[in-house]
Amino acid sequence: MGLPLRVGIVGVGKISEQYLATLPSLPVLRLVAVADLDAERTELVAAAHGVRASTVDELLAAPDVDVVLNLTIPSAHVEIGTRALRAGKHVFAEKPLGLEPASAQAMLDLADSLGLRVGSAPDTVLGTGVQTARVVVDSGAIGTPIAASVFWSAPGHERWHPSPAFYYQPGGGPLLDMGPYYLTALVHLFGPVVRVYGRSTRSDRVRTIETGPNAGTTLSVDVDTHVSAVLEHAGGVTSTITVSFEIRRTRAPLFEVFGTGGTVAVPDPNMFSESVEIATDEDPEWRKVPESAGYRDATRGIGLADLAESVADGRPHRASGRLALHVLEIMDAVLRSNAAHTAIELESRVERPEPVPLRAPDGVEPLPSPASNRTTS
Image (cartoon, rainbow, N blue to C red; front, side, top):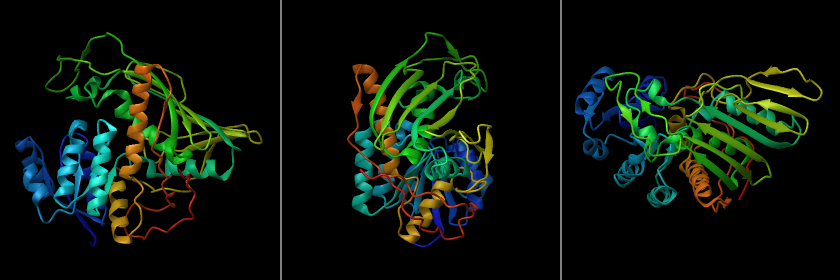
């Protein structure tokens, strides 16, 4: 299959705006069609971007679509992904990969049997922020990494999102919504997670949509809205993570890695290219670290471009379905741990994705094959 890969988008809601803005700048991809359950919205988006408006069935059956970019709500990710694979298409999905590991595993097994690729967001971790942090940690600049801490919080998405109901339904909540960014970054940095202990809760406050045509509508909250977990990585690092829709203000650092000789402040994995900072025993003042790895000035869709290049080059893609499945299994284990009041051991293992050399996100330069720096199962 040659480049560019021809892309069909299923789901043209709010997140699609970021992908639609990016795709024209990536020459390894070419958007050909869009589809959504809302036919009027499909027509508007198609006209704005000069592509074909389709129904979902038409897009999945289209012979000129090589890869389906699945931007549907989380509860539809596995269904649409499976249908796309059966139609002979590669798949790249928004996070999370699915609602529970078993069905996501079945989708990946189907892809393997058909010789097709599945990729998944987040691809923000392929930007210069997390990738430069990985170089710093792997270099030994802070000694041996011992632990990491993540603390992400917000009052709730009803304050800005016009249709936020799905954030409070199964498949939503802060863990499945924001957890993939931070958990994926932790796996990039330290390798797979082998054991978790989780606790979660929710408040009884009334949540009301504050913007858009549904403003004033009260939301039903069917998931826990504050989640904390302790994660044990295969290499021995212990990381802690808190994600919450309950906190209005905090001074807690977002993401830090602690080593025997210093600390790295990791930039937000929900962004591509914010600065890495470091403080060490020898140089205790915080200083910014120059970009040394990752896609420079990247935006959403770079993981799909990496998948396209991998198809052409015959190499593993970095934002892989297997990585997303491991992250989904971590999140599922956190919630099961909360229910059982005990630690949960994970059976799956995943290799650290290959690091990304510093490069522009133009999809033109061939990606080098850097020396492997993986944690094996």
